[in-house]
Image (cartoon, rainbow, N blue to C red; front, side, top):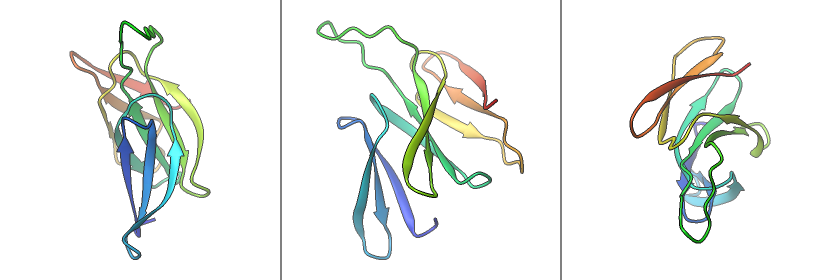
Length: 115
C-alpha cells in the first residue's frame, strides 16, 4: 500500500485514495461525518480514521464520535469503533497484534480496544 496516500476530506465526509505513481485520486471512500486524523495499521491492512462530529444549531447530533475502519485489501469501509466526543487524531502502538490505540480529543486522551 506504499504507493497510495490517504487524505481526509472533512467537508465531504470521505477519504481520498491517491495513487502516488499516477499522481491522481483513484477512489473516494465514504467514512461518516467529519473525518479528521488517520493512521495505517499494517498488521491487519486497515486504516483507522477519527471523526469529529460538528454540533450545529441546524443539525444537532449528540452521538459519540467514532473511528471508522477501512480495509486496505478492497478499499471499503468495514466498521466503526466508538471513541468519545471530539476525536481529532489517533496513535497506534507499534505491535504485531494491535488490540488498543489512543484517540486524542480536545481535552483528554482515551484508549480504545479493538475487541
